[in-house]
Structures are given as structure tokens and as C-alpha cells.
Length: 244
Image 1 (cartoon, rainbow, N blue to C red):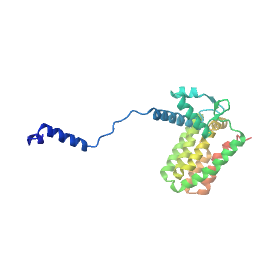
Image 2: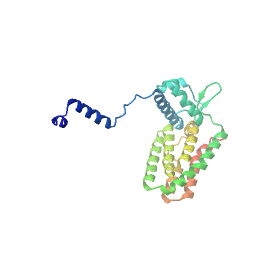
Image 3: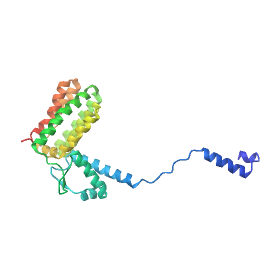
Image 4: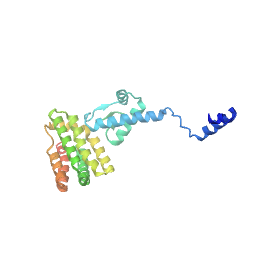
């Protein structure tokens, strides 16, 4: 409008506008998601959800499933379902037979002993590393989780018990700031998930594990040897009952 008032011709105005337009950064035009990205998101969703279900004991040892059934349950095509299964087999959360049968692992006594030994080595170390950062808010959080565990035990909710029990340990171990060790620990939890379901059904717990109280007490006192002992006992005592 100022240019017109100065007698600028319409052609000059168009040229000026064109020049200004070239100087203004052009915003990128959003593109629809690529098919590859969509498939990746679908397979990641299936993988993470199924991984959590196996880890928390929603499936029993040796329970069979099919890729087609997984795809139908998650409303995805065969490709993301197959990719999720492939990753879970690599993690040890599922087994794949030579005939193509997919199932949750049935662990031998030797395998249970091995995984229990891994937990006994790594988890006390994670607890030890977390101890210097065990502030009161963390201890209060662990106490609240223990209360939820007690509720699950009273209801005989085995899956809920396993889920909140692992939440108790994960909440503590996150303070260790040792992501590689925690990732390895969670892989062991995944492989043990269906077995833990059988174990808790057999134990028929009705209250919070005694070792959980000892863990909290050791954190509150800053007692590293007691913390290590309580963690080692907590992660192995139940599993030893399955070793014959």
C-alpha cells in the first residue's frame, strides 16, 4: 500500500512482492507417512506389547501362538506380526521350532538355575549402584509399590503380582544409571516371565515378600551389604523351588 501511494506501478509492486516472497523461508509441506514408517510403527507396537505380556506372565510356559493369530489380535498384517515374533525369538521371549511352531519358553531346571544365577549377580550390583541416589522420595515410591503388591497378593492376581514386583525392582534399578545392565536384566525377566507365572501360582502368596521389606530397610539405613543380601535372596529364593 505504501508503494502504491508513492506512485509505484502495478508491475513494480508485483516485482517487489515476488522479491519479498523469495526472501521468506518456505515451510516444508507435510508429507503423508510412508508405508515403511507405518509398518515399523505397527511392528514396534506389537513387539513392545507382546514383550510386556510375556514378561508379566500373561502366558504360561509352552503356550502356543501363531503369527496369524498375533496379527489378528493386534489388528495388523502378517509382516509386522512376523517381525515382532522374530525379535522376541532373538530376545529369548519366544521359541520357534523347526516346524515353525511359535510358543513361550518351557525352561529346564538347568536353564532356570542359570537365569537365577544371572539375576543374583547383576541385580545386587544394580541395587548397590542405586544406593547413593536412594532419596526419601524413592523409598516412599517403593513402599507404595509394596502396598500394591500386597493388594495383588490378597486378590490372588498372579499377573498383577508379577507386574508390580518387577516395577519395584525396575524403579530401584533405574537409580543405578546403568542402562546396559538394566537392559540385560530385563531380557532375563522376559525369558522367565511364563515360568514366574507358574511359580507364583504355586507359591500362592498372600502378602509382600519379606525380602522387599528388607530391601527398603537397607536403603533407608544406607546399608549396602544388607541391600545386596536382600536382593540376592529375593531374586533367587522362589526360583530355586522350581529347580529339581
